Amino acid sequence: TLILQSKGAGVFVWKLDAEKIASEIAQSDSPDAFPAIFQQYPAIDRAEVRFIPSWVRSIPHNPSRIHIQTGGLTS
Image 1 (spheres, rainbow, N blue to C red):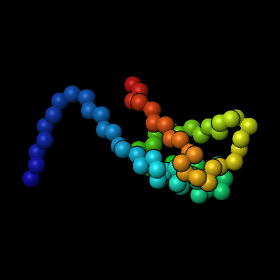
Image 2 (cartoon, one colour; image 1 turned 60 degrees about the vertical axis):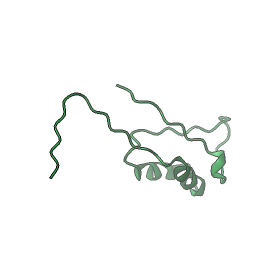
Image 3 (cartoon, rainbow, N blue to C red; image 1 turned 120 degrees about the horizontal axis):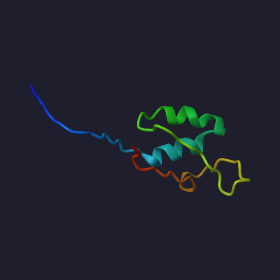
Image 4 (tube, rainbow, N blue to C red; image 1 turned 180 degrees about the vertical axis):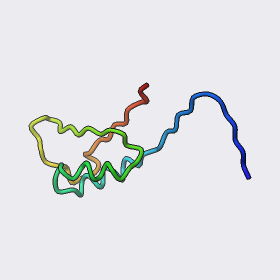
């Protein structure tokens, strides 16, 4: 039995496997599949996809060309 008492504000942070997410994105056929990929990860609260340069609309099939940036905590 473990009893834990604490006071104060707590923040839980999940670690994302960015390489796995990039691999899943690279294997997808369409950007329409991205929401389903992101929904598999409870740690993702919000995701935004950007194609750079903006006129590019194809998904790189090489995961190393997909950059995943994680944001900091917001209050």
